Length: 243
Length: 214
Image 1 (cartoon, each protein chain N blue to C red):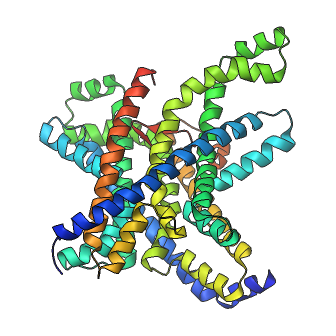
Image 2: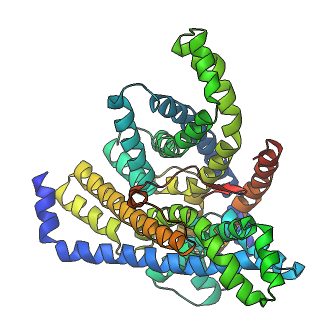
Image 3: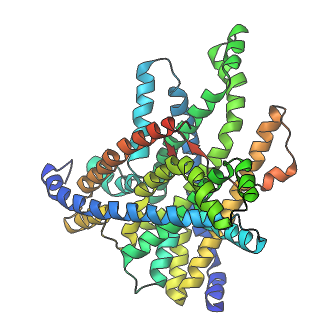
């Protein structure tokens, strides 16, 4: 057991590099997913059938075809088909962003729909422009409702980053597997890897809880400090599918 | 080699469908494990002693927060003598049990308090309280959520390819590797099969959810 950890300390720069790749994939993938969630989610609320339809098709396509296949398609199938080749990390970011963006779009759509009708009418009565209505009245209220679901999605995304190992990006899983091969300590290696992911997930949850608290404060809904340490709930289901 | 080769697509399709049977088998059995184990965990989570409830909750939180792929690869590396498909089904089942247990928990919490009190008043033993009163009411409410988890499990079965279960994606990768990189056809078709299988199921689940008034 000590053999594994002493190797881990010796190879620390490599481990840190792997962790960095994993974090990059998570954060960049999440940012892309967030942008797509809002784009597709707001499109789903459009009055134009065409805009709504495009959003629906894109969302169902990326939710329906499995992240694993999307990632592999980008890595293996796209280069021969189009001649463009993405680096493994970029493949990961694009696939995570598209897949989770599709799930996130449903969250945005659901949250925007759940803002009471009267708020729209009041904003309309005050003659706010559609953009201001969205930005000043609807979104701040919808945002508070979106955060817990987004937290779940973010952890799901983090949990998918070991897929990068399969398309040979040198992520955390790759590095730990190398250490395992060198020391032969399978159980210690995988438990360590799981523990690191657990810590990362918990840290992200804390950050998101902080974000939720700030968003609630903006609406005048103060919450105690205890809310920060609340674990995420598994049972948040968006319409037509979990995650 | 450029563009989409229809001959290769025709050649790989039967292989994919063969693998698809394994995919379905893993999903169905995995869902069963998750449904049963999740229920057991949810019931254990309401045990009177904290020495039971706290460890159960911590373990499930850990399973829920760590990657399925690492759990799979780790289990396969530790239990080399067990068949990969069995490992896959058990790991999928345990992973999703961490989610379904929360669903059951919410379902059990949703049973009105009066029902518990009535059971106590009738001095029903705990076993009969669960069996005859609480579970029949709780399980009805959780069925749509379980269905949704089955769909997400279905979309995560490609992970099993990594531990050499011969499911659809395994076949796709093998075909691509053996035929000088006809990955495009294999993966495009595999994705379409997933879409064709999962989209109608999602629609059905949505209908069921509406029907049960969620």
